Every structure is written in C-alpha cells, then in structure tokens.
Amino acid sequence: MSDDQPDRLLKLDEVKRRVGLGKSMIYRLIQEGKFPAPYKVTSSASRWSDQEVRAWIDEVKDGFEGKKRKVGQSNIHRL
Picture (cartoon, rainbow, N blue to C red):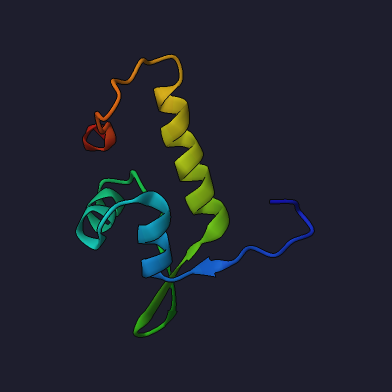
C-alpha cells in the first residue's frame, strides 16, 4: 500500500477471512503479542489496520521462506 493511500480499518470477519484463523485464535495471538491488536473505534466496535494485518501476513510468509512444506500439510499450528 502506498503512502498516499489511507489505511483501511477492517472488521473481524474480514480479518478472519484474510488470515484464515478463527476469532479465538486471533485473540489468543493478540494476547501473546503475536498479532496486531485492534483499534477500539467505539465502546462496542473494534477494527484492525489493513496495513498491520498485511504486514503480519508477510511476516508469516517470510517465516516459511526457505522451508520446504509438504503438500497438504498446514503450518498454521506453528504460529
């Protein structure tokens, strides 16, 4: 995303779709400091930074760089 474009704020359903994780796992990773925390936009609404979620996805991908994955084997449990 270029610097001249504003950062979008994502709802939980969009974050779940992008990262392929459920709500409980996302919040567990947030508590462990391993996933971007949401911004509280109202007392009952949280939103995630699109840029921060993309950066997290890139970090996860970079962690697999150079590692050989077996076809059909999920590496998501190693987070």
